[in-house]
Image (cartoon, rainbow, N blue to C red; front, side):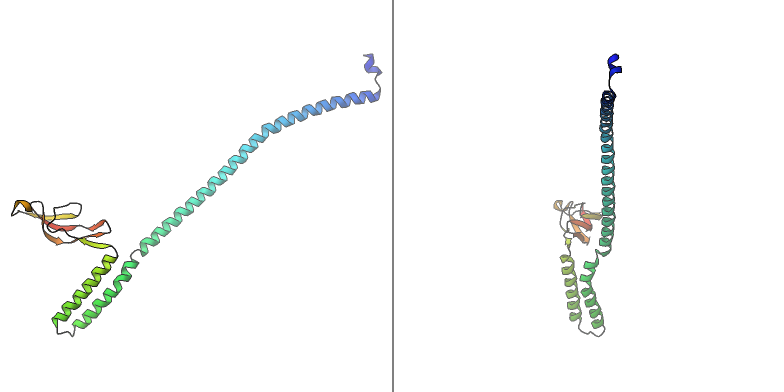
Length: 187
């Protein structure tokens, strides 16, 4: 104890400084440990915030895409028939000219020929757009392509189950049946 009392003030200050430095080092260690503990939490908060922001942006982009697609589809449906109708306009013009010519026509063969020309033009135009008639007369009944209107007795065994009369032609647009053939079947 005497040693402590005998210490000079400078020595006491040095001892105090060393004690303060030790305390400061301990505090720094505690602060560093707190910072380490706080940094992962902040990092997680930042990561969650960043992912949430990405999610919101992605959701907004998808919602905009969905709206744009719905609008484009609606526009396409509205204008889908435009191409076909434009192709039909010359045929309508031909019919109007034929009607006007029929008012003064005396030659029945010229009228027949004009009607046949317009029919051929209409048929070629619809074929170019993908419409095609399919034959059913003499074929075996196929419920995927035909609609049976009535059944009649068969005159021979080979006629059974076959189409013997075609009341309305069937049509396909590409590979899709858009009108079933209305047929009479022999039984």
